[in-house]
Each structure stands twice: as structure tokens, then as C-alpha cells.
Image (cartoon, rainbow, N blue to C red):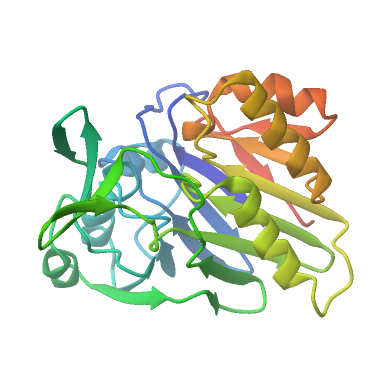
Length: 274
């Protein structure tokens, strides 16, 4: 399995561009997928520089409908030679906002559902769990444990966003597993624990479990980051791929726990499960 970072907040590869967002190209068994699509057409530009053909993606997985994970979707769809399966969580098309003091700022999808469908998107809504094939399982419908400034619009105004649309992808082969999350608004520890518990119910323990992506820790305190790193280790994580809203400040706490790590700079390529 090969993973290539197409969009992230920081960049490594010469000529590639960074932006606030996330996108990961996944290749396994001659199938190619995208996990999130950043906030603009930057992923197409970066893909060209990295010599990745995005014209025949098998499926797209969208972690949630915030703009920095969906903004490049229309550009990717226009680039396809065929209709494309797009997997999303429940209530994906609800209008998302962020409350700052007494003002509400729209931070959701830049286009309507029908705009994407006109460009060949075939949307599939994921419940709690959906197996794509023997290697890939999508998990969603996590329980959000905290409240924050993220809200969704309803008929009466606004209500707390429970992030029912948030999903994570589990990629496994033999006794190894990689879990990819976009922003982890529902809490990275409980999301990962949910997946591990489910996957290990009827299987032998995995030798190596890697979690990578955004962990929503940019504004976390040192104590909070330390606790997240400690809990990830306790539930069996061996390696952490730090990206997007995890923040680079999380790295010292990962090191403190003795975990292996990757910095998911744009252009970085990772090979797992050889």
C-alpha cells in the first residue's frame, strides 16, 4: 500500500503547494482512492508535480463536509474520465457554520449536491460501518463527546454540530492496520478505539497499527496533547502520522511516548504493508 500526501498545512516537496486542509492519495492492489480533497484545486497541481494521475480514481472518501476537506471535490470530479463513487457520512449536506462571538461564518460545502452530481459524483451515505473490500472499511457515526463553536443550520436557527458525517477509513492487510482521519472532531482516541475494538472482535491482534491525519489538537493544551498521545499508545497505536489540525506541537508528546511518527508534509510518500 502506498500513501501520498497531496494537501496539508505544510509542504516538503519542491514546487508543491500547501494550504489549510488535507488530502491523501491511497493506492492498494491496483486500486486508487482519495481521502479528502483539500479546499481548492491545489491537489490537482500537486498531483501533477508528484506524477500522480487523478483521472481515474476508484472512490473518494470525505471525512466531513468542512470546506478544507471538500473544496477540491468539484475540480477532481471534472478531471475524471468516469462517474465516481463518493462516500460520505450521515447529514453530510447540512449547512455548517462556526460561531465566533455572536457571528456565524459559513465553513461548509462550497457547492450544492446537484452540482457535484452533474460532474459524475455518485454519493453513498455510510452508517456506522461499510466494507469497501477486504482491505478497506469505512467507519462513521461516532459519538461526539464535547461541545464547541461548530454548529449546523436548522429551521429555527443553529444547533451544535454533532458531526454525524465524520468518517475514518481503516486499511488493513494481514496483521497490519492504518487508520486515516481527516479532523477527528469526535475525538481521535475514541474514534480509533471504536475501530480497533470492532476490527479485533473476530481477528487476532494486529502487529502494527498506524493512525494518521488531522487530530484537532492545534488549540489543545500541553496536558491535553500529552494525554492524547498516552491514550493512543495505551490502545495499541505504534505509529502516528501527524497532519493538518494535529499541529506540529503534538510531535514532542508523540516522541515522549516512544511512538514512531511521520510528518505528513505535502509530497511525502509512505509505503506500508510490504
